[in-house]
Figure 1 (cartoon, rainbow over the protein chains, first blue to last red):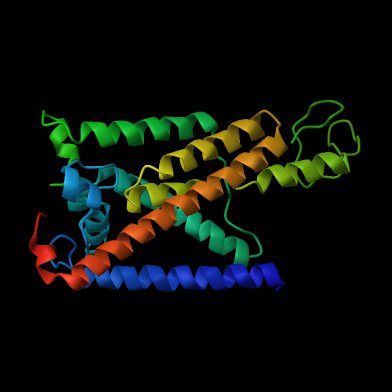
Figure 2 (figure 1 turned 180 degrees about the vertical axis):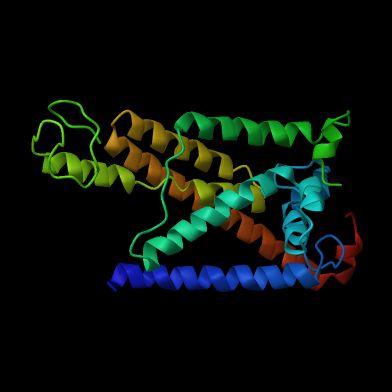
Length: 138
Length: 119
């Protein structure tokens, strides 16, 4: 194993440990109720939901296996989760496997679409009208 | 990739074109490898956008889009530059998120009543 790969393996191990610790913490301390997790400053002072609002609570719901409740907290976070997990597995497979998992390159237009979706999501979830208020954490 | 001589699609690790038997240029192979290895930092950008609660993740995603559009048009050098920019913005967003988190932790530690406010 060359040096670069060893460094990557160490990073991979640290991320694994970090994710496990986060999962255990999220399982036993519920964000928004336990007082352990500080709420977002933007929300605290302006009352606006940003695109990331509810993502910690969504993660906590996922750790508890309740995907529907997670979707209600932050639908975008849940949508990204499989993609993020696959990227992590891809990263690991490149370090440890002889034949890594298939890699992919997302077309630029799709990423631009993503930018639009994230910004729109941040605006729409603050609207007090049906059906947009379902996008707010609830 | 495609054969330079006849345009047939060929395997990435092939040395000769199966159609016209022309030798696959080593330069082309290197370029393809380089294209594959330009990171977009898209996952990191999405993570900082979602979890750092900050607008700095958005430029990182925009630069990720730029990496792939430049690669698609064959501009490897420009893509590398955009890749570097995406990385920088990811770190900026991450650092800002971390600083805000630390401020909040200090605020909670100094004033226990603070956490009962708002929410």
